[in-house]
Length: 272
Image 1 (cartoon, rainbow, N blue to C red):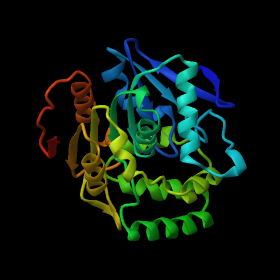
Image 2: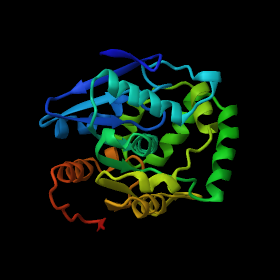
Image 3: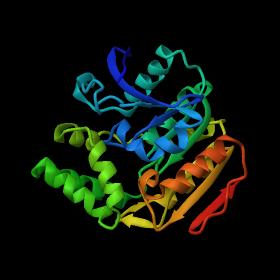
């Protein structure tokens, strides 16, 4: 259970396997434990580097001025790589981890070898999504933490595996959850052109909740990155790393190894 000091905080991380390193950036509220469905597939041939980023897991919780800030987390990640003496690495990010991965690739492009972005957005999907977020923030502020988690798990009522992984990996308290949800959205669509690394974008196809269309979010990212591929999964959503773990793993490994992406039922593949 190693820790390093980077950017004036303590960052906890875990490592699995040996070989070419891959940086895995988890989703909001989670920790390195959410990557359990990837352990077997990746650790055989790759070195999985899985940090808990600021506010999560066993990493420092405090933010300057007590304001959750995605851009500060990006600086943490860059400094984390510097401490590990890693100057170029594959990066895989899911959900909020996908946002952090793209922001990292925009600001520090030379650090990125290949980039995988799953279940992510470069802008707020719709005005309705902003309303849903505001309403949920108000409701969540009134509820006990365990009730909030149970409400979130209702989206996965037909997927007990995803429920188990997410419950096991949750690592923030109610205060941090609300701070994260109220933080300014890190809009960066107009900066995606700066990403030159080969990129695989993945997302669910179709609306999951009012105002949130993963397919649209994924297509937007794909459209604005020059060297990109896109995989859209029908009947699945965030996080694909659990809901479609086998295909998720296979697609990423094929992508990293420069293989032609396989065709799967209910997965549409697009290339530029």
